Image (cartoon, rainbow, N blue to C red):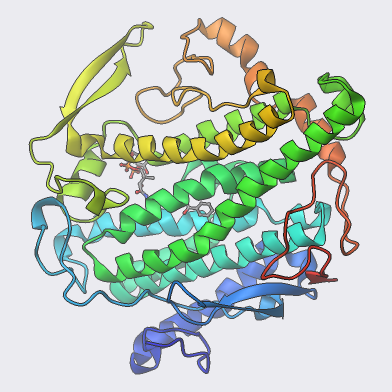
Length: 474
Ligand code: BYC
C-alpha cells in the first residue's frame, strides 16, 4: 500500500479505516511533538534542513529529499510490504502462518521487547540533543538531524504497534516512553548505553558506528518475528538504519584521515604534537572505540539467557538472517560458551543453543564491527603507520551484563587484579583529560563548505549534491 500523506499521521497501514486507533495515535501526536520540542535538537527548530522523508517502502527510490523545518517533519507509520502467506521461520511454531495479532500467551514477552526497542529511539535523540551547537560542518549537522528525525520515526513505528496491538497497556507504555529520559536519575532509559552522555562528535560517530549497529542486529532479529506487523515494521526501519551506520563509519574514517594528514605535516606520531595541532591522536580514538564497543556489547544481553531461549522457542525473536542457518528449531543443539569462575579461571560450558542466542547474535555483531576497523587500518597502513593500527578490545572487556560483568580484564583479554584494573582503566577508555581535549576541539563550523580542523571533509555530498551545498539554512 502507498504511503498516504494526506492524513495527519502519514501511514501505509490504512489508519483512516481504524478510527479508534487513529484517535489514540492523534492523541499521542502532540505529546510526541512536545517531547521533540523539549528534548530534541530544539535550538534548530527554525532551520531549513535538507532531509529525506520516506515516500514508499521499496528498497529503490523510497526517499524524497527537500529542505524541511524539523518540527514540520512528517513522522509516520510505514511497514514493509506483507510477504504473501508468510510462515513462522524458526522455533517451536515453525511453518505455521505468521501471526497478525499477538498470541495471548506471549503478550507480555512481546510487549517487553517492543518497549525495550522503542525506548532506545527517543533516548538517542536525547543523548544527542546538544551536538548541533558544536557541529564540524553543515554536512555533518544535516546528518545528525537526519539521524534524529528517523529515530523519532522509529519511535512512531513502535508506538503504532503498542497502540494497535496491546490495548490500554500499550497506550500506557507509549506515555512512559516520553516520561523516561536518558541519564535521568529517577527515570532513566532501560538499557545502559542509552544513558551514556554523547557530548562530542567523536562519541557521536562511535555511537552511530557501534550502537546503531546493535540496532541493525536487533532489528534483523525482530524482522524474523512470527508476529508479522513487528516483522514488517522492523524490515522498513532497517532501510533507514543503514545511513546511520554510514555516518559513523565515514565519520571515524574522516577523523583518521585528518589525523594522518597532520602526522605527515608534522613528521611525527607524537600524540601531544598532534593534539597541539588540533587533531585527534590515534590512541585517543582507540580509547573512544574501546568505550563504545564495550558498552554496546552489553546490549545483546547475557551469554546464557532464559529470556533469549524462550523468545526463540516461541517464535518471538529469531537470529539475524535466520534463513542463513540450517537448523531453525535448535531443539537439541548446543554451543560452547566461555565463562569464568569468579577466581580468574576461564572454562568452557556447553549450553543449549537456544539459551545462547544472545551470544550467537553478539558474535555476528563483532564480525560486522571488524569491517570498519579493517578499513580504517588500511588508511593507516597506506600512510606508513602500521604500528598504530586500531583494534577492537576483547568482547570480555568492561562488561556490565552477562558472564563477564565486573570481571577485571584488560583489552587484550588478560584477567587482572581489581586494583590493577582500577588503576589502569584510564589507559583504555577516555580519561577526563581526553574528554576535555576532545571537547576543546568542538568549535562550531557553520559556513557552507567549511570544515573543522580535526576532521577531513566527506568524499561526497548527500543525494549527489556537492559537499559545499548549504545542507542546513540557519
Ligand atoms: N542494560 O537475559 P538477559 C537501537 C536486562 S539499539 C540494561 O541478559 P535478554 C538503536 C534485560 O532487559 C537496539 N539492562 O537478556 C541504536 C533483562 O531485564 P528484565 C535496541 C539490560 O532479555 C541507536 C535482564 O537484563 N533493541 O535500536 O535476553 C540509536 C536480563 O536479560 C541490558 C533491542 O534491544 C543492558 N545493556 O536480552 C537508536 C531489542 N541487557 O527483563 C536505536 C529488544 C540486558 O529481566 N530487546 N538487560 O527486567 C531485546 O531483545 C532484549 O531485551 C535484550 C536483552 C537483547 C536487550
